[in-house]
Image (cartoon, rainbow, N blue to C red; front, top):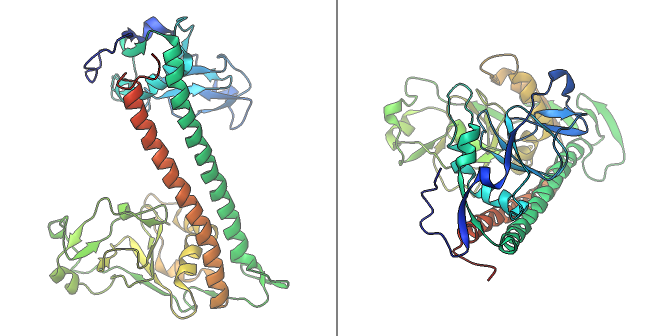
Length: 405
């Protein structure tokens, strides 16, 4: 297969088929009895991640693989440990003498989206060995140039992996910290038993219903918007589940209603510092309507609820608590067991939560917020590195920028 994006072939480069660069070997099906949740060697099949683990291996470390079947067929991976190559996975073995393995991985990753288009079939899509073998790559003739390109791109990969590891460790720290702060507080010496377990002696507990929090659902009456009432621009943003992901607002896809429709509805309109919970379908996602949200008029849909904090809670603390591990566990328990998960108001109102001084609430919220900021900074760094990598790949793997003469 020729790549239509290749307009010119740089001096000293060639178009070569994958089958001319390496032996393409399909893996062997692993008996289900030999696959476990943990084990010495990962078992790779048609997906992006290992299908499981096993105590056997059939392929050496530092081998490039390409998924053969399934929704992720065409995904390119570079395995740095021994592994089991399954029946829906290709390994690239016995590379041509003048091909650098790191470079080959980078150029395959660069063309991954095109390799994925080689798939055939609808039920269980797959990539035929011949189609993969005929796919052409632009390769520098000199292995020294290949090595130099791979070195530059691999360095960015290392920075991305290092940043991702920082994010994972910080998120793990945050989860543990939230569990500690929401049960032990800050600086307490004496504790007592409660419905929530051990809590500081100075704290109390109450149900959400008795804590002063108002739990508000959306307007489900005759004035609920119909499809014809929505537009891409308008007076009032009408939330859907796509607007709340990873416990924050996402405004990539928005629907609006006119002022007249908004004013005709009774309840479900947000006030600043409200906390929003998705309560039907994908349950348990939380968002906070603070001053950073640019929209002044927002309504929830019928699959959401509003938590209005009242006098006993700092709104930022309540948002962190409602999106913390204790409440996430409750949402999961309440929403399980049906095809269409749902969190009824009556059940939510009976959940016991801690009551603690506003001053301590603010301190706890600030500690968690500082960890959130560290995570966000590193996510931004990671995104910038990913964009840098894309730009470098476009320049270096097309020969537009030469690094070796």
